[in-house]
Length: 270
Ligand code: DGL
Image (cartoon, rainbow, N blue to C red; front, side):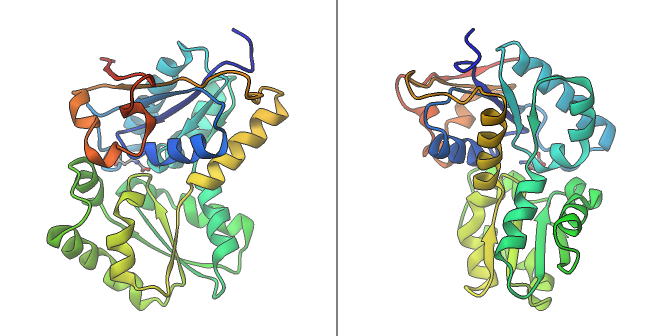
C-alpha cells in the first residue's frame, strides 16, 4: 500500500486508548486508524513487567498485520514498561504516551508541583518522575496509584456517588501536597475528569497525554514523509479481544467507530 495511506495502529488494554484516538482524529483527520483494545486481559496495571511486555509485543504483532505506518501505545502502563523492548524488536516507529504527558504537565505548571495518578504498574515504574526530571529537574512530582479507576471506566461508571467516593479516597493526600497540575497518567482517566476535577477543585489543572501524543505522531509522520495529504477518506477500524458489545457502551460514543461507515468493532482472539 502507498506509504502515506497506510493506517496508524493504536493499542490499549481496553477502551482508555480511545481518548488518544479522539485526539488523533481531531489533529490528523485524514489518517486512517486501526485500534486494538485487549479487553480480554484488562487491566494491565495490576500485572508484572514481564506480562505487560509480553502482551504489548503481541499487540504490536497484531497491528503489524495491517501494515501500519506507526504505532501509538495509548496505554501508560505499557508505555512505562514495554516501550524500550518494543522499539528494540520492531522497526516501525512506536510512540508512547509518557513523554508527551510529562511535557504537557511541565508546560502547564506554575508552582512546579505536579501530581501524577496512574495504575499500580505505572506508578511503580517511576516513568513520569524520570520523564519530568529529564525535561525540568526543578519540578517536584507527587504520585498516587488509583487501581479502581480502570474498572470504573470499563463499567461505564463515570460519575455518581461511588466514583466520587473512590476519587476522594485516592486524591485526598495529593490535594494536601498543593499541586497545581495533575497528570491523568492512564488513558482511561480522562473519562473520569469531571469527578477528579470536582474532588481537587478548580485550582488544579488536569492534563493528559492525548493532544501532545497526537502532535508527536504528526512530527514522526512528517519526518518519515508519510503524513496523509487529505486526498483520501480515512477509515477507522476497531478490534477487541473480548465481547464487542461492551466496547460500544455510551462512554465510547464520541468516537467514530460507533457510527455508520466507520467500521464496526470486531472481536479478535489472540
Ligand atoms: N489505559 C491504560 C493505561 O493508560 C491501562 C489501564 C490498565 O489496563 O490497567 O495505563
